[in-house]
Image (tube, rainbow, N blue to C red; front, side, top):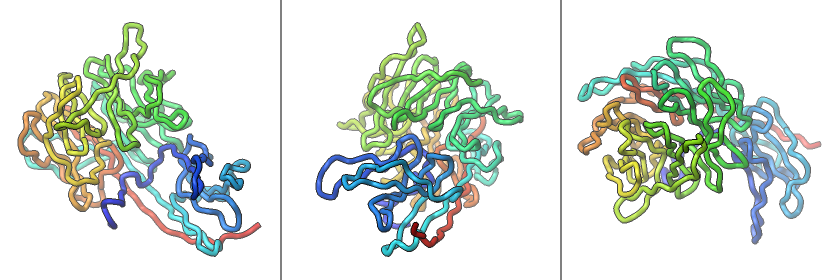
Amino acid sequence: MGNVGFVTTATLGNIAASSIWVVSAEAGAPIRVTDDQSLNVSPAWAPGAIGLLYISTRDGGPDVYQVALTGSGRPRGSPVRLTTGLGARGISVSADGTRLAYAVFAERSNVWSLPLPAPGAEAVSIARAVPLTLGNQTIETVALSPDGEWLAFDSDRSGVQQIYRVRLAGGEPEQVTSESAGAFFPRWSPDGREISYHSFREGLRRVFVLPAEGGTPVQVATGPDDLSGAQWSPDGRRLLLLANMATSNPTWDVVTRQADRRWSAPRRLPVVIGPDTTQCGIGDWSPDGRLIACICRPGLVVLAATGGPGRLLAPAPSPTFTAQWAPPQWSSDSRLIYYLTADSAGVHGVSAVPVTGGAPRVAVRFDDPTRPWHRYGFFVSRDRYYFTLGDLQSDIWVAEVGRR
């Protein structure tokens, strides 16, 4: 699929907030021309005028908007919505300005589950997975409550990504959050009373905690860093945060809940491989609280919960491996780490490796092309795997551009 060094499908269909900027071809400061609270992508110069066409979700689903610009590149007036219900994800304007090509991308992902086989057993096929959620929705991440009775997941079933919970025994999903900018990556506190997640404030991801049944969210940390992917320590007193995930240098921060239940300022937690501090993805604490595992650029790494030198347990399958946003999962006895892998064709699977080191073994084979792993949903409980599996489809259309 093209040059793998420059082409990636990791963010295909991304729904996170983003903004569009312009800059002079000669010199000058960049100028933001859209909001940063909704998805704004695929800018194209508008024909016959100084302005931009682009895709935005500012009023709901992705549609085409136009914004006029001044000679200096600043927005002139509010954006104008040109389509309704188009569902486009990318646009391109012909050189003569008479035609518009657009790609309509439809994705659906739900939570599926597989039994966790005994250590040393043969790998299981994803074809054996059973669905736990249904519907026309996109679920990115999933987590099981400590008592094993509830699933928490983020879904766009209401139009904007929100956190939901549903009983495994059955019933309708219950909406937990009401974030205008969306809510992502739910994680249960060890006592099952709270759920952490991240949302957007002023263009940055921010981490929040709220009661598991819903209520008023409490922001965990402030400051200049983008913070996401919160993971609770086993004692429930700390949260491990991924700082600046959308940059070339993501790092870890730890916040601690104090006696007055307020959260401390973030403390940087370095990850060192060899002589260098390395980039890392979302990490997860071992059940005994002594170690943290994560997918870094070199591969699967484990290190002390206090940070510092790490041990490489398994190399990354390729330089473009992007499953670092799906954190590795620990066995309940802290002896094994399960992590996502991908072959040269991008087909995913799950491998398991002992914390003490050794050859990884394949645990789950994604050998059914109709059930591909999608987004970032990967969770392992005492006796089951949980995944988000997707159905992705796209068509390209061409429309005539009318002039007013």
